[in-house]
Amino acid sequence: MKIIPVILSGGSGTRLWPLSREQYPKQLLNLVGEHSMIQATALRLKAVDLMDGETVAPPIMVGNEEYRFLMAEQMRQIGILKFPLILEPCGRNTAPALTLAAHMAQLDDPDAIMVVMPADHIIQDEQAFRDAIRQGVKLAKTGKLVTFGILPTAPDTGYGYIRLGQHQGDQAFLVAEFVEKPELATAEQYLASGDFLWNGGIFALKASVWLAKIQQCRPDIAAATLQAFNHRTQDNDFIRPDPEHFKACPSESIDYAVMEKLASVASNTAEVVVVPLAANWSDVGAWDALWEIGDKDPQGNVLMGDVIAVDTTDTLVLSSKRLVACVGLSDLIVVETSDAILVADKAHLQKVKEVVAQIKAAGRSETDSHRKTNRPWGWYDCIDGGDRFQVKRIMVNPGASLSLQMHHHRAEHWVVVRGTAQVTRGDEVFLVSENQSTFIPLGTMHRLENPGKLTLEMIEVQSGSYLNEDDIVRYQDNYGRDE
Image (cartoon, rainbow, N blue to C red; front, side, top):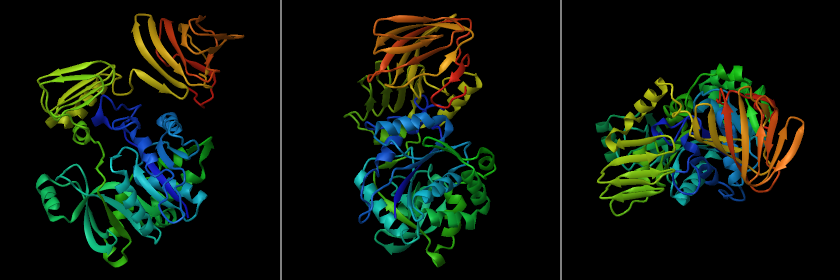
């Protein structure tokens, strides 16, 4: 019997703007420690013996098609090279995503146990997490549907709650009911009673049991996801469910689709159990959550990046690029990126979504992407621009190459500042070394490659009448892109 981590990577985390963007959501960010949240999630169970003689298999990841190369690259950085990455054609919440993962898990082991984790949570006490998971896996082996309830530390109104039922021994309880996000007074009662846990969206269950229960509780979801999975396509480790069948699937969460329905009869069937989890958990839903879990200086500040704080207290300051100096601040959030800065009172962070909405309504790009844009071959950073010109800094990974392409409206000058480039220009193929340059005329087919073992860095100066990214005709691409 294999234990297979299932990492659900959906959502864009707009409340963490300007660091989180639609094209680079919060699960890909390094907010705590040296790894991004999705990397930390994958590492949480990697190569850990949870049961007698059992080890954890490579994860199954379910995520958005748009982030496929970013997710694959972040896994490569931590040594996870071969794993199935299921790409949802559209968002349909967690129940369909888990059902797809269950079908994939059964291809590997018909009796596999899935440990289901959101990609965008922070858990600081890794040992406590593993201890709880070990207990949950033990219960899942007997056919239980196991959820992990977070031990609440405050009467938080931003989470759903789980009411504890009968004690089952070994720190497990039946689930009496799942409760919606409460009002403050109700949340205070929940906290005082000691009978409620936060619903963290973490589960352990057999793939076969989940598929049976989704068929029992939501046969429409079961049928649509089965058809989407059976008609899937695959290239490398990318698994693409059939778009038409998946779009026809109802959108529903794991809790609504199955857990709540079975918990309502738990006193008779004892199918749904909860294991309490006290592991310094946070879903980092907003900037104040990062301040709460961060390492604070004697004045209560969390300072990240190039920051100087004078007469400043209880403030989070995050600098991505430039020196940020704060004087006389209290209870604020200051987040600096290369193209946007957020300054907010901690008491009004819920209004960050309003800022994002106004930026979108104005047709601006600051909610979509950062100035630095990741690509499967590396990244580029638009460092300057004006009328009829644009300057980019480009980094190409060792062995990687851009597509064979052409532009109708711009010419390009390339200057190599580190490494060696192999350049295709029309019928020519030649090398350009450090401190050398070349010119790509408008309308000329061309390609940039890094044939070396070190990263290639170069400066590109574009000139022409139209400089947007959609002025590109791809003739051949190693990454399956057609735009």
